Image (tube, rainbow, N blue to C red; front, side):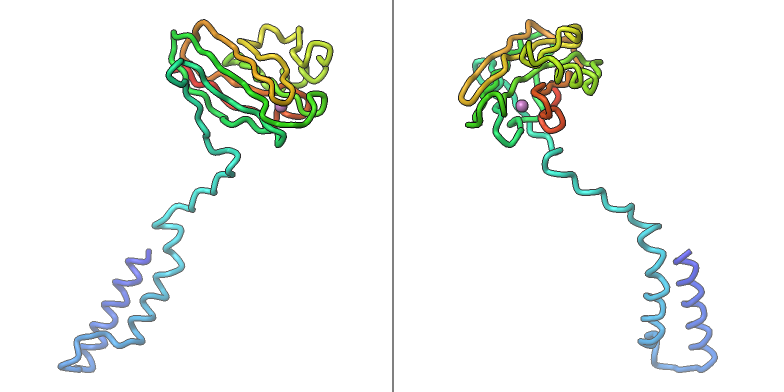
Length: 193
Ligand code: CO
């Protein structure tokens, strides 16, 4: 559409130039140039450029943890209810070892953390609801055991635990902290390729 308007304007200017017979001046007048630019402007954002993608929140950006030389993946959890990674990369068919360290200082009863790897098709929200009611078993719900691949202990400040998974088939396995209220912020995905 904007091209058509420009062509029309250019034709108009050429005709105007011819009819008035202004010999030496081949440049369009400043008025004509600015008119063409102004006409062209409104159509541009829709036609040429797609709307810029929304800037992702920092919390949603992938922070990837990978195994060290000994094959151990290090993840920490803090008093701000955050894991140090929201993505863990692992290889299919190989042993997976994940260490969780609680680097916070708040008491376990108020800010305990665990790392629970769920099955690829697990309903994370439903699991979280059941976990909240499982205080007696440190928020590992017995009635959702079939959703769990592996989990650490519930850790207080300075404590560490390691989970070992013999092997997994390729897929995306959600992991969460199942302490009440933490799941919304403390979650990620174990990607097995
Ligand atoms: Co937690």
